[in-house]
Structure formats: C-alpha cells, structure tokens
Length: 275
Image 1 (cartoon, helix red, strand yellow):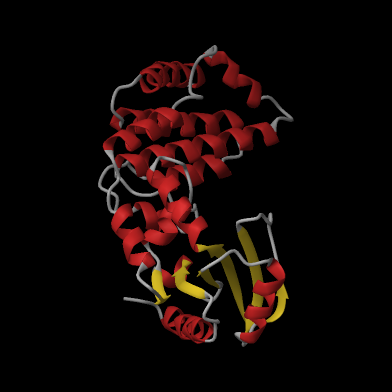
Image 2: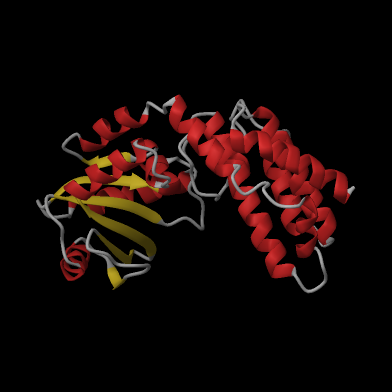
C-alpha cells in the first residue's frame, strides 16, 4: 500500500503534468513516489519526453509555467538531456527532459546490455500523461535475456583476481582509509550487480537497499546487513574480510564463467590470508 506521503506527492506531480505544454508526449513519474514508498525526505522525480529536443532555457520556461519556482539545474548538461530543478508548494521537484528519439535510443541501449539506472526507473514508472510510450517500454523491459545476465555477472567479477591475493593488504595499512573505502564500495556494487542479474532485475540505485533486496529469491544471507557491516567496520582487515566473505557467497550462486571461476579461487585465497 502506498504511503500517505506518496499520495500527497503524486497529487502534486499530476498537477505539474497537467500544466505542461503539447510538446510533451509522455510524463513518467519515477523514484520513490512511483514505487509508493515516499517519506518526508522524498522529492518528486519525473521524466518528461518531448516531440523534439528542447534547449535548457525552454525547459526552464515550461517548468515555470507549470508552477515551479526557484528554477535551477544540476549535473552534466548534454545535447540530449536537460535537467530542471525547482519547488512546487515547497516540495522539491526534479524534471529530466528527453526527446522521444533519445528516450527510444536509451531503452534500446539498455535492452542491448548497456548498464543504466534508466531501466529500473522506467520499469517502475507511472504514466501521468501518455501516448503509450511507457507501456511499450515496460513491455520491452519485461524480457531480461539470459545472455545479458551472464555478461553482467562476468563483467562484475572481472576485478576479483588476476594479481596476488596479498595485494589486498595494501589497503589495510594505516593511512589508507580512502583507498579502503573506494575498494569496499566498488566490491559492494559488483556484488549487487551480480545479485540483480541472477534475479533478472534491472539494477536500481543503492537507496533503500534492504527493502530492494529483501524480496529477491536468489541472494546471499543478510546481503544488505553485511554490506553495511563492511562499510562501517573500523578495523580495515575485518572490513575486507566481511566483504570478501560476501563476495565468496555471491560467487557461489553465480554460473560458471572465466571471470567467475577465477574470482572464486582468488577470493578464497584472500579470505584465508585475512583470517
């Protein structure tokens, strides 16, 4: 059941969508509001798909006419994407503007195997204004090919091995906290990439991790809790051991492949070294 905050924010999103000009073909509500889990910290995120590519200034103007104040932008701006931030009745709003051609190309790229959070956003998106584009994209995203999953798993396991297991000890030395955190974060991301691929789930962001992984049938025990444990552990050696054991349990679930098989042997040796 959707939270009360979700219902409140969706009402605002619907007002904004209704006020957008005819050049807008599709309005897709994304983020926590689309998934029904919005809370007091949540903003409203929407993908705005237009018949043609708009300049940032045009997007600003349309956003203001739809009721947004304090309009600004964030992140990299490209020829295909415009990002508009603003407030509507005090609620923060993020609008990502794409042309229809760019949206279609982005979905095609995801289906072809390009890593992107776009797939998860669209798969859980809610159409607030539509000509049928979102429904068609969601139909395409229902299929998660086995070959794509296998390729993502192999790619995720790539960095686990190929050098001496003792090399991991260079990041547990005093004064190497940044290098340690960088490695733990990368390893956690790769573990999650494998788990999502095993479950044929388009990779989401890392927010609300425990809730996202809880329903997955194929995963290591205490997945989110062990990632948290590794990241907050004050003893560097212990932190790497916790993460390495999680890697080993994840690899045990993965299908055999050159990178996976090598990673299994290497991670085993790292664990023996750290114990």
